[in-house]
Image 1 (cartoon, helix red, strand yellow):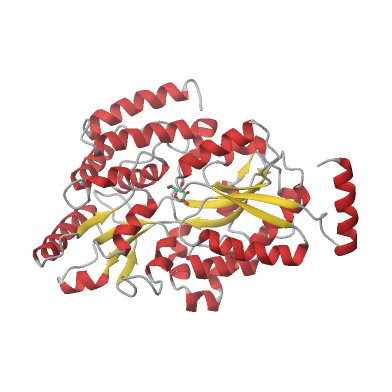
Image 2 (cartoon, protein in one colour):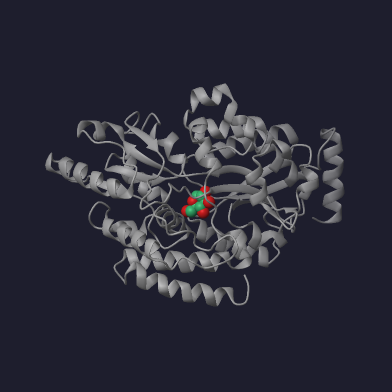
Amino acid sequence: MTLLKHLMSGIAATAVLATGAMAADLTIVHGSVGRDQEVLRGQLDRFEAETDHTVTIVSMPESTTDQFGQYKLWLAAQSSDVDVYRMDVIWAPQLAAHFVDLTPHVADIIDGFVPAAVESQTVDGKLVALPMFLGAPALYYRSDLLEKHGEEVPTTWQELTATAQRVMDAERAAGNDDMWGFVWQGAAYEGLTCNAQEWTNSMGGGRIVDLDGAISINNEKAAAALDLAASWVGTITPEGVLNYKEEDARGVFQSGNAVFMRNWNYAYALGNGDDSPIKGKFGVAILPSGDGGQSTATLGGWHLGVSKYSENQEAAIELVRFLNNYDNQKERAIVTSRPPTVSAVYLDPEVAEKQEFIPLWKPVVDNALPRPSAATLRKYNEVSAAFWTAAHKTLSGNGTGAENLAQLENELKRLKGPRW
Ligand code: GLC
C-alpha cells in the first residue's frame, strides 16, 4: 500500500470504526472440499459487516499436494497478494519462515484450543498458524447393506476384505452392476501417504519415519500391508482408485455404489445431506487393524496463517481470530462435520444434537497419528512423495511391497543424510 492509501484508509477507518485495524481488502487462499467454501463465505460476509474490511477468497485445487506447490511459489516470491493462507497440518515446519508469529496476537484465547493442534503448528516457539479444524478419518459403511446380508462391521483388514467381497458379489448378483466393496484415496499425492500410513501402522509395520528420525519402514509387516492393499485394486476396489482423491471416493460411496469407504470427517455431513441417496443408510467405525497392530487414523486438519509479506497484517490477524471464534468453529462443526480446534465446542449440547459425529469422534481425533513432518522438518514433502510413490507402485502392480519398501529405505536414507 502506498503511504497515501494508508493515510486515507486510516482516516476512513477512524471515521467508521472505533477499534480494529484500518479498513483493508484482504485475500485468503483456501482449498475446498464439500461445503467448506460456502460456510467460509458466509462467515466472511459477517466479518465484512462487523469490521469494514473486505475479503476475497482465492480458491485452490482439491489436492493438498497441488496447493503446496502453488503456496511455495507465492511465498518464495514474497508476494503480498495473499494475506491469509489456509495451511495443511503438515506444512508448518516447512513454511514457518514465511509466516507471522501469532503467539502474541492470540495469547488471550490460545488456552481454549486443543493443545496437540497448537503444538503441531508451533515451530521453534513460533505459532505459524492458528488451528482451524482437525481431521481423523473413519471407515464409512453401509449399515443397510450389512444388515441385509447379515454381515458385521469389520474390525480387521482381513475381515474388511472378505466382507466387502461378499456384499459386493451379492449386490452384483442381484443386478447392482456398479457396486464396489471399498473405496479410498489411491492417487499419487499426499492423500495416499495418509491411507498407506494407516495400513502399515495398523498392521504392525510402524511409522514412515520414527519420532526420533530413525527409518524402519522397510519391514515385513509394512510390506504385507501394502501387498494386501494392492490385492484390493481390481477386486473390491475399482482400478480407477489409482487416480482417486477424497471427492472421487465420496462420489462413489455417496451415490450408493460402495459398501465401505475410507474418508475424512467432512463426508459425514454430506452423506446425511437432504439430497444424498445414502442419507440415514450408513454408519462410521474406526479403521480396521491387523496382525497385532492398532487401528490408525492419520491426523489431518487445516489451519490459518498470516503471511509475513502481507501489507494488512493487523486486519489479517483479526480475520484469523474471527474465523476461529467459538461461534464460527461451532457452525463449521455442525454444517461440515469437521472436528473443531476449540475444545469447548466438543461439549456443546447443540453440536451434539445437530452433529453427533463430533462428540463421537473426539477420542479418535485425540489419538490420531501425525505424519512425520516434525521429525523430517524441511524434507517432509520429499519424504512423503517417496512414501506415496512406493505405495502407488505397489498398488499398480509395479513391484511388490517388499521391493518398493527396500527402494524407499534407500531413498529416505539419501534424503536424511547425516540428519534430518
Ligand atoms: C485432508 C487432511 C490433510 C491431508 C489431506 C490429504 O485434507 O485434512 O491433512 O493432508 O486430506 O489428502
